[in-house]
Length: 227
Image (cartoon, rainbow, N blue to C red; front, side, top):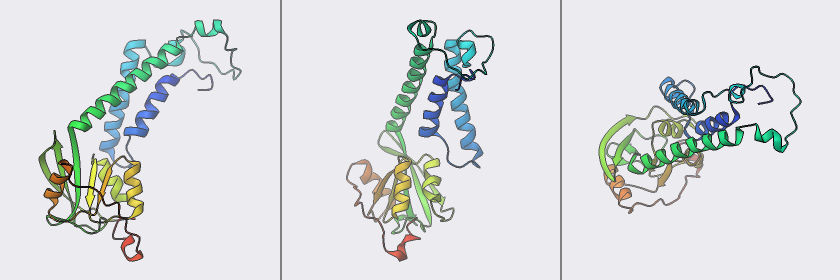
């Protein structure tokens, strides 16, 4: 960046994408932050093992960083002396392989949350008593966990569930603001569900539970449905 010749731009770009796609949202969540730092360090280490370093000047075999802001002319001879194209290609390869691995994992395992009152799907997402979270492997429920609703405040619950690794949320109704946040976090939203929570999950896994797409717009429901 700006001829500082510190961390390679290809590495910075790779880690920025990983942060945007898989990063944490709550700066106070030390566990999620540590997990993300571990991921960042492992990807950077893979690049370093292949190329000796992640530092620009070391990759370019330059002894000092530069504080001269004037760039060199980008000539054919300039590019022949620079390994930058190969470094960008390798960073992209690391990123592509990691995303492919994550996509494969998500297809094999997933978490489905149901906004619940007791054992039933609740009508209103934001003020449910608890979230029943089901671990699914290869289309089968392997574990069920009940997580008490930690309390509704604007924008909190969608991020709370997404940070727990939830891939799908099932509810009777939900506010538009909550739907938008779930969409931004790549969490599938199923609304219009009712009845037994586990049965709803099993119907979803069989492809028999579809979202109605209905969003609570009435003023009296805004707070209850998670906006």
